[in-house]
Image 1 (cartoon, one colour):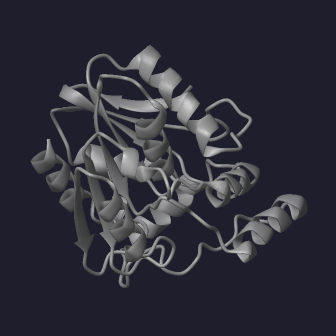
Image 2: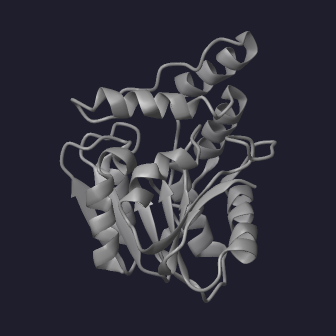
Length: 241
């Protein structure tokens, strides 16, 4: 089990990455929150974390729950980006932990359908041994920093293509649209107005269904708002805390 941990005051933030990602996607957000207890974990099969990759969001939530039990003391919030947001939703629905104070949902939805072309592309690349395919449009906001994109691409190489494909399939099978109304903990929901992978309507649905929720739409942000708008998201989390 590999993860990044920074000590500080509670409640702790426990951050779960998205499809084909790893803990580095949260580097900027963790750096923007000094003084707060915070973790960025790796799901199995990437960045030094033992595999194999997990096949469903429910399995990922079980992994998260074991991590919380073994590594995190005191109360906590789960922060989830994209697929990680599905894991956060699953945890809020299935966990009976009294330590869970809330969830932070970044660029995610109650259902995470994936275009068949993305699934096919990852399968083909895994069989051929080619390089990691280009990322879908709408991942970054227009005019994104070339240095940020280059660093993200380098970190993405720590996730094998087979693991990425498994992540996308787990996304595609996730559907909690009928259940999120039963979430009893507070939810901070953040979406990018230019996100083509998880459009704003996904966040609006979550906000309409989760009883205690707060929605923020970041104008111009793409799917990787967790990296590009880390300072803004850190401010929103601090205000919510």
